[in-house]
Every structure is written in C-alpha cells, then in structure tokens.
Image (cartoon, rainbow, N blue to C red; front, side, top):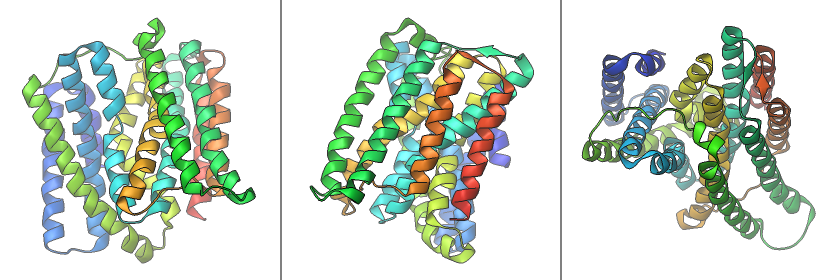
Length: 360
C-alpha cells in the first residue's frame, strides 16, 4: 500500500511527490532482482513483483505523457492511447509465452470489467459525493458504450462458434476477429481525435517533466524494467496459485489488471473528484476499449509465434460478467449525467463478479 500511496501523492504532490514515487519504484525493482537472485519464497517474489509493476506502470505513464507533451496534443494523444496499457500488455505477453492462456484471457475480461465497473464506479461514487450530479459528453460516452457492446459481441461469438458449429479452427476465427477488432480500434481513434468533444476528453496538457531525449530514455528503461519484472511475476503465478489455492482465473481477472493499471485508475478517480468527468470517463472507458481492440489483437497475433495460440473462447462466467458490465455501463452513459448512487451500483456489481471468480 505504500507504493499506491506514493503514486497517489505524486499526482498532487508536485515534483517532490514524484521523486518519492520514482525512488520507491527503483527500490522495489532492485528488491525484485535481489529476491530472484536469492531464490526467495514464491509469495515474497509475487508480492514484490506486483508492487514493482505498479510503480513501473506509473513511470511508463509519466514518460509517455512527457514525450507526448513534446510531440504536441494530437501525437501525444496517440502515444497515450498506444502506450496506456503497455505494462499490462508486457505482463500478458510473458504469461502467453509461458503457456498461461487461462490467465491471459481472464486478464482481458478482468481489465474490461475492472475499468467499467470498479474504476468508473469509484469515479462516479467519489465525484458524486463531492460534487453532486455530474455531467459529461453524452456523444463520446455513447460512442464508448457502443464500442464496448461491439467488444462483447466480438469476444462472445468465437466461444459460441466453438461450442455449436463444426467448421474452421477456433484459432483461425480468433485471428480473423482480431483483425476486425484492430481495424475498429484505428477507426475509433480517428473519430475521437477528430471530434471537438473528443479533444476535451484528453484533459489538460501539462509541462513535460523531462526533456525530449530524457523522456525517451526513461520510457525505454521503464519498458525494459517492466519486461524483467514481468518475467519474474509470471514465473511466480503458477506456484503461487498452487501454494495458496487461488485459481488462475481469479489471478487473471482480478490481480493482473490491478497490477498493470492501478496508477492510471487512481488518476481517473482523482480527476472525477475534481469534477472533470469527460476526462475521467475517457480514462476508464477508453482503457477498456484499448485492452479489447488493441491489446487483445496483439496477443492473438503473437500467440502462434510464441507457440501458444490464443483462442478467443471464454468461460460462461467470464462472458456473463462482461455482458453485465457492458449493459450497465450503457445505461449509465445514456443521459450524460451521473450521481454517486450509480457509482455504488457499479462497484456492487464488480464485487459480486469478483466473489464469483474467487469461488470458481
């Protein structure tokens, strides 16, 4: 929790808060190297790698934002859209390489429902308690909700196909669906960046923390560190689940998305608390769409190359949770207004889903 508090402090604490967060992240990364070298217990490795990845995901975001500020608002927006889920993508690539396809597929569903139920719910709850009824662009929120509905269809049909029809391999269908999803992501970005309302969802451009070269160096260094720590994290997942009795499904749906995205989640909630709902919803819903339409196709394309093809076939529990998240989010986005009770309801649905996955 100390790392999480440091990340939160860095959002409002200026350069001093950021320096503390950077220091904590570096210390945790060094600690991961040490426990790996000493062959420490699986639980210790899992705990330290999780905390280190939280910090490194935040550093990646800071470096991307800084590089984007040098490149200008439009290129900066594309950079943030592309690298927003970089940490989670790297984690899942290592998990896929290790053959943990259950964890990878569960993390896709977990990221989507975590963003639209828990993160958006916390944003609406805290923002509504402080500011009362809040408003946002119904146009952009409607586009996001519609895109999430398409995501639900795209992720459900390969499963239905595999269960009911004798035909082409589910792997072939998954690759073809992934191509369509990637094209939709490009069209989605085009719409968002060309829309006047979409420009508002990007939030304010801040002064870059680093110079242009330094931003690139930090980005590359953080990416390399995430890759190293992710390998250790993935290596600890299977023995850890056996030791404490957690299922790989629960780890993928709940733990991996939290580790990869918690710093971004904290920012989204804090922005809603400051009554900037367009920006906040852009973070929560946009991140879900990015995972579905960009991260998922990349993983499907890489699967055969890594020797573990990723079929977009999911359990009924996963698809049920996804459908519930999409339907409820659609209702919330309809009128362009939100309140704290809607946030509490979203969080309630997420907790119910988390309990179901825990006991699965």
